[in-house]
Amino acid sequence: MFRKFLLIVAAGAIFQYWGDIKQFINPPPDFSQDHDGKVILYATAWCGYCAKARKLLDDHNIDYYEYDIEKSVEGHEQYKALGGRGVPVLLIKGQVIKGYSREKMLALIQ
Image (cartoon, rainbow, N blue to C red; front, side, top):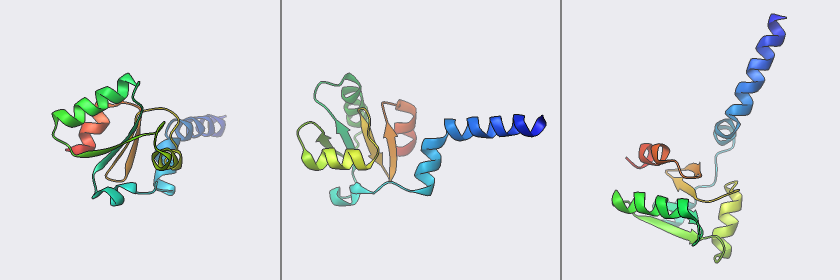
């Protein structure tokens, strides 16, 4: 009975942290090398959270390169390679942030 409980807890933990585990086992490509190490923002023109990400980067004087994934074939391909399934997606120091997360962004850009 106890083993079954531990197995369920372990499976739940793996499911919850699968993105982090996957990034550790198979790190994402670091496309920032092509842009002098800048933060890369994969976004769209209509996305409100993308606008919030731009503002946060601008407010902290962070240089970044932006791809509009609806207009840039290269940007769209990189976005897919990073496992993008929504916007914004940010690549900061080799770490991928999916969605707008002020805390995660600030932790990586500081």
